[in-house]
Length: 385
Image (cartoon, rainbow, N blue to C red):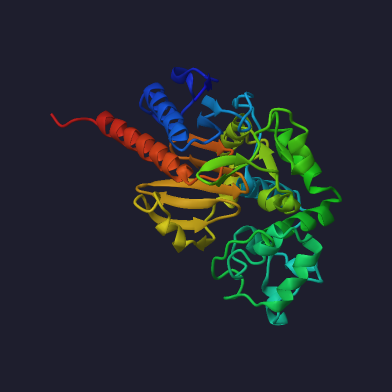
């Protein structure tokens, strides 16, 4: 598999709040592993970026943008990032809320009076915070089947009048795309700007994400883009870009490259306080609701001891370390992003195929990196005389 590699920052010069082992050998090992895994699973194309402190220390592209094409994936190739878009939605919403446009405690019906559950007594219990913390109480993935059937959002929302939450809002976890995306009309009403405009003004431009965009038009406006692939008859086949989830932009509407997401991680690690202050970062990563099902995730389950959803982010207890995480999966793509604020380390991975190899690669990286960090820290401790 043809490889394109770019070192964005010298390893020795990478910023870190804590002493860490030499990163170059660890990065080289992961680079080789990542390439081997994509080759083993015959993934058409992929990219990753590793962030340490305030720098992207390594990023690479592998394979091709589309099966049968010679156009190579590089670190600037744009992918659909699927539900990793939720991290952007939460970041944007935290900024808009901090500007005073709405409050996390506001009732959803204050902005969407037409919204109703089957039992109206639940309506006023549903707060804006519950949308982005996946704690609406509604059964998981409610009406995602209608999204995938290409039903328009205005026809899906009235369907909630047929169901009730499984628990009062705020008291249990249920992963949502439709309800999560209600943050879009709330921000539009309170600011008078479209979701794409707000994202560009508050996130993409100030963080200098060179190729990030929102929506189907944004994806096709970029020539250097990775096309989707699905598995059939034992091999990967190129397929059309599905528009349906783009209609739910907060849930799955962002397009980005490995480099874009590297800069996004730099901000999450606290190195762009003009956009994301420590207060905002603490707010969006504060644990809101337990996600016990995550403890059974393939490949992850041997490492995880606790799991929560915050605002647009998952919070994993990975052994003795806390990881802030989110994955994404939409037709023809997988994406994964995670970081450790304590160790000032982050990873993003993108592939243009629906493969569970992402679970293997993510846990390989974090188990190797965190083990090396802890071993190094132990070695630095004063030895008894």
